[in-house]
Length: 216
Image (cartoon, rainbow, N blue to C red):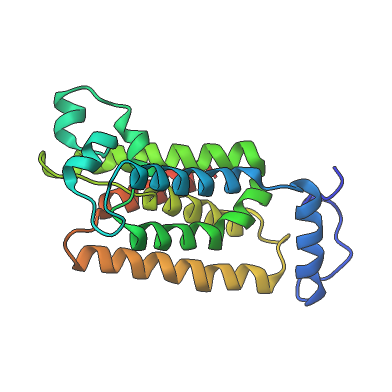
C-alpha cells in the first residue's frame, strides 16, 4: 500500500529525516483528517447552540445541562435515558472546559487520525466517549451530573500511546519518545489531579483511556 508504515524503510529510525518521511507517508494514507475536524466542529457547534439557547458561556446551570443531555446516573439507570451516554460528551461546563478539551484533542488527534484512518478514528472517539460515560455512571453518586469530551479525548490519548508500542520498530525513535514523554506525562498528570481534587470525573477519564487503548 503506498505510504503504508509496513513498507520497507529507506531511512534508519534514528535519522532525524525519518520523522519528516513518516509525516509524508501518513498524509498519503489519510490526506484529510476529516474525523478530527468533524468532532471539533460538533463540540463547538453544540456549545454555540447552547449559547443561542441562553445558556451561560462561563458557568451554565445544571438544569440547563441536564435538559441538553448531561450524563446522570439517576436519569440513565432510573429513567433509561441511555442516549445521554453520548450527548454528554458534546456538552461542556463553560468556555474554559471546552477549550481545554479541544486543545487536548487537537494535540493528539491529528496523528491518531492519520495512523488509524477516519473511520477508525471516529470509532475510537465515539466508543471511548460511550465507555467513559458508562464508567462514570457506575462510580458516580446518583444525583451527580457530568459533561465533557474529556473521556473521548483520553480515549484518543490511549490509542496514541498504544500505537507507539504497536508500531515500535517502524516509528522514528524520536517520534516515539516524544509521544511517550509528552502525552504519557499529560495523562499521568491529569489523572493525578483528578484523584486529588473533587469535581473531576476521573472514572470517565480512566474508562475512556482504557477503551481507546483496547480499541487501538
